[in-house]
Image 1 (cartoon, one colour):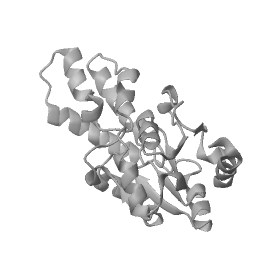
Image 2 (cartoon, helix red, strand yellow):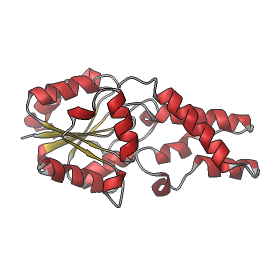
Image 3 (cartoon, helix red, strand yellow):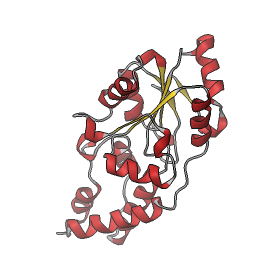
Image 4 (cartoon, helix red, strand yellow):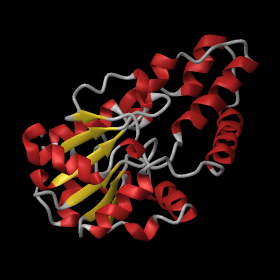
Length: 224
């Protein structure tokens, strides 16, 4: 019996990933370079350290210039925030939260981002108080694709792996969910639709395309 839903944050609840990619693409073009999408996709759903790819460092490699890291990354950060602050909640997210609440399910966020980032944006869109637990990189030693975030979310909610569903947009997140033994629903966004998400138990194009009841019915009927 499913008792809980666990949501990723970046790219699943809010599209914070394409704005970041777009800003870095603009900066790369200022220097006559292109940011390779395949390299950038490595950082989605995990940390820069875990992915081994840092946009600023790659820009320096391409240009051979002695760039001011604080200045370049500061511009990227400011531009990213401006775009993200204009982003609405992604389609279907609020409906799934509301239906989960109506069914008495517990809710958590499990994100590789820091708490300050996740809380800031959840409060802005009015969803912060919807969740029983918010687990972030501040709470674990290893982020996705390690299962630590999801295991911590299960513990905080007091449910077993087989009693939860994870909503994820990234390959790193799907890998983490499967490693934690949790049913994984892949919901790719503009960027992660280019990523292999076949490790998910099921993939849908948008949370607006199915109801929670549809997903629960599929699990109950042996599609788990």
